[in-house]
Amino acid sequence: SDFGLSAVSDQIRQDGLFHTFCGTPAYVAPEVLGRKGYDAVKVDIWSCGVILFVLMAGYLPFNDQNIMAMYKKIYRGEFRCPRWFSSELVRLLMKLLDTNPETRITIPEIMENRWFKKGFKHIRFYIEDDKFCSVEEADDDVGSYATDHSSMSESESELDTRRGAGSLPRPASLNAFDLISFSPGFNLSGLFEEGGEGSRFVTGAPVSKILSKLEEIAKVVRFTVRKKDCRVSLEGSREGEKGPLTIAAEIFELTPSLVVVEIKKKGGDRGEFEEFYNRELKPGLENLMEEESQSTASAAAAAAATADSCLPPDSE
Image 1 (cartoon, one colour):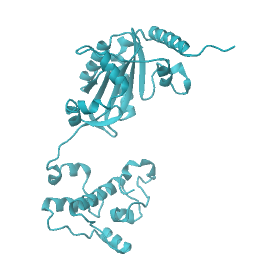
Image 2: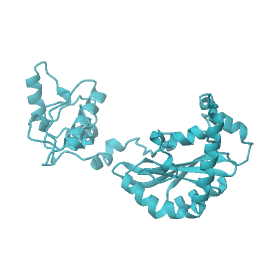
Image 3: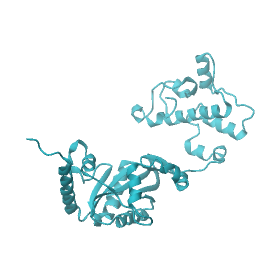
Image 4: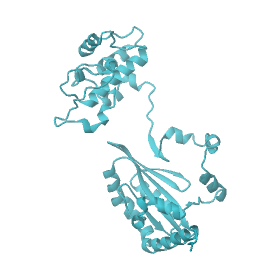
C-alpha cells in the first residue's frame, strides 16, 4: 500500500503508531524508513505530496537506480522542483514533503492553502441506490434522464407505466419470496422488527402521509431530503468520522391497503444512526406504527396465502 494506511486501524499498536514497513519505495515517507513507528495520517500526506509532484512534473521527486541512494534522498528530503512550478505550488510541496512529521502540513491546512483553493469547488456527496452521488450529479438528473432510462430496471419501468402523470407514486409490490428474502436464514420471526442498522414496519397509512412525515422529521433536524418515487434519502449536515449520516427509507406495497416501510443506514456512524433513530425517527413515526401489530398479522396471513398459491400440490 502506498497510501490510505490511516484507514487500516487494526495495524495500530499500543503506542498508537503503525510499525508496518510497506509501500512503493519512491512513495515511502522518511519516518517509515526509520522503523520507529509512524503516524499513518502524516505518512498519507507525504504520499499525497509525491503524487502531486508526479502529476505536475511528470517524474518522481525522489528517484535513483540505487534504491539505498534513493532512500537517503527521501530521508533527507532532497528534491528539486522544475522551473515551471509556481512559487505557491513549490511552497505547498515543501510543506507536504517535510521530513519532520510534526511540522508537516495537515489536511485542514491543505484545504485552506491558496494554491489548493484555486478553482476548487466543494461538492457534497450522498448515497442513493448504494452508489455515491454528488449534488451536481443530482442537478443534472433531468438532462440525463433519456440516457439513463434505457438502463432502468424492469420493475422501475413497470412502476412508471402504472403511475399516471402527476399522480402519487405507487410502491413496488412485494410477494412472499420478497418477504422471505428480507430475513436471512428463513427466520421470519424478525421480519418486521428493528435491526442494528435498519428497521422495517407495516402500516396502513397512505404513501403520501408517510413521505410527508419523513420530510417533516428531516426538516426538524435540518437534514437534506431527496425523493425519488417511493424512496426517500435523508442526509445530515454534520461530517462525522465516517462522513455525514445518510438514511434511506423505501416503501413497498404488501397488499392494496398495507405497505412495508424499510429504513436503512446508508452512510455515517452506526452509533449516530441509532441515536437519531431512537430520538427522532422512531418517535416521529410512532403514529404510523400504532397499528403495527394488527398490520403485521394481516401481512403474515397475506404472505402465507401467497406462498400457498405458489407451492405445487402434494403428490400422493
